[in-house]
Length: 293
Image 1 (cartoon, one colour):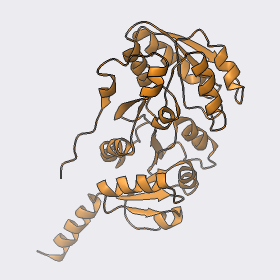
Image 2 (cartoon, helix red, strand yellow; image 1 turned 90 degrees about the vertical axis):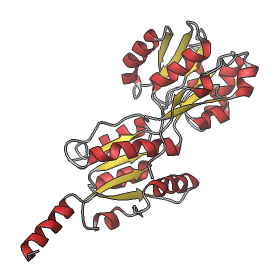
Image 3 (cartoon, one colour; image 1 turned 180 degrees about the vertical axis):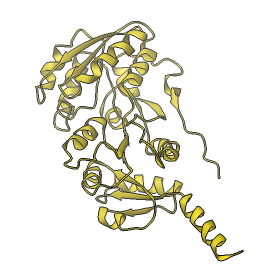
Image 4 (cartoon, helix red, strand yellow; image 1 turned 135 degrees about the vertical axis):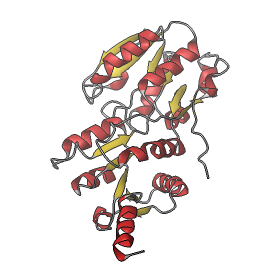
């Protein structure tokens, strides 16, 4: 084979080389370690660093993953592209991207959110009660854009959605009290309303009224909500595995909620509030298929 043919073959292989997966993870917490372990299990050849400059200096095509809000912000400022945000909530993702000073921030970044969509949480509520019930939801100016989609989803499921609009940093316990007529409360991830500081008070107040709370994470179920659809770390990583082939060329897909999810029930809360969990609710969800070896 002549030299020109060899060079042409090599250039074709480089052109079709799979992009390197470069993971930007800032901090060494148990959650970050769990995420990195799940990614390394699927992508043993990935490169990881807490410094975006280290990743950017590497040669060849790449896909960048930003684990959490701090990494997302650093990746945007370093103009790493294409950049996929993982394990940053939808609300925080939108705030970080909007606050970025880089003019290309909207062109080369997308996300898989960690929380399951609120519409699926409504499906869980419908499956739990199996009859028309009223669902109260508290929205701030940050989550107000969800209202129309929630109303449509609730109507399709035969649920009566009661929307209460509250100012950011409002007294959440008092605002939820205005939804006292609702059979169940749907909690939306909203850092301006639900915080670590007020969560215990929120759950105590709703419990006293006999109002179950549904959503928005497994951690909340362990803390005292009735139920939630949630995505595990492995579910989100499996979703990225399906998304990755779409990241090589052309516009990036829009940010999206996890494709895979499952349901967790707090049996103690269900018993205390007199909620009988129908058969099949625990089996709701969508699980990823085993990856071919």
